[in-house]
Length: 408
Ligand SMILES: [Zn+2]
Image 1 (spheres, rainbow, N blue to C red):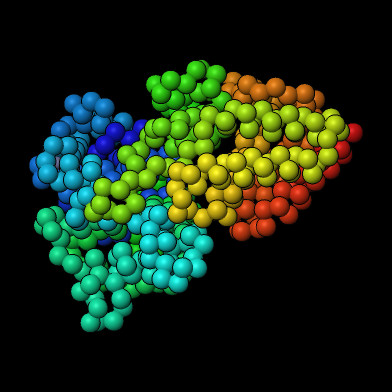
Image 2: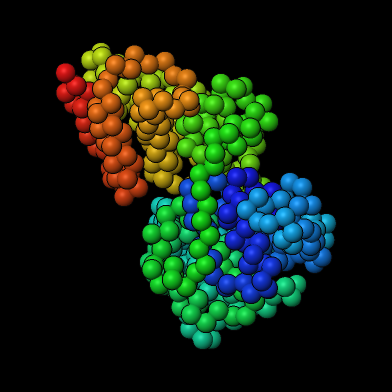
């Protein structure tokens, strides 16, 4: 396996499966965004496709050691030097197919897709082919493995699959061709059909410890203060923290837009302006708490920051949906605010972890902060459910203002 940070239980699960020699054909890698699910799926495929996999005891595996496994457990690791391993590094392995949202427009025959969901055309084009018998041979799933070590399919953000897409996949899963493996990556497994979930091996990934995120950020040149702030705000998502910190690099090998070509895409990396955004939002909240600004001003601040975030994302990935990018931006800003409230609550129960932000609302009672946190979480959930962004921000900031005003 590649070295995946902070996920010993998930890696133990995968190593045990490889060791047993009886791999499930369908997998769900579930857990928060940016914690290594995609990298782990890639590592799993790489290991199983490797021409000369290495067997080594866990205690001698160095950085690949899996703390959740016994020392004498025999790990299976990719050699990283064979033709297959190198092809995976270069995103052009003929038996590894990655389905991601970058392919939405590629398969959009109508030209009307908003680029926010994976349609049945994407799943047919990349995996299952047309349902009718005469076209089945066209499907990548039913083609022969080119290097005779099986075929691997990774669906990133699998929860974006529309129901017809999931149904078409389900049909294929009922009788999977031999030596074909499907890994679905998702932060919202509940969005997948229960019939898909019940057929899949589920591997759970957790939020990373803040210390892991801090260490990696510092290795990338962040100061202790920046690393602490981003680690806290990212909620244990290394991918998110790095995307915020660094415009040039990502933790992951860039995800291929189309396996088989050398085209790569960089994850959206709205820059170090994150520090400016955090300060503006905090100032806005402070003003709100002190009655120095009205809720609509804070709503406007968040909206304009989200638009700025979206512009940067779209520069990185011009095929992405603008609506989705703005929603992502709002989610980031709401995430900052939730982290901020959460941190205030934790401080009150004596946690050592703290976001070093200027704030004049320490005096707010715990019950008010808890209520504000609840309002923020509700807004995050509604954002996921496609609520109108402007309206959502207006009602949310108004609810915060009222909660804070009621403290007396
Ligand atoms: Zn190899």
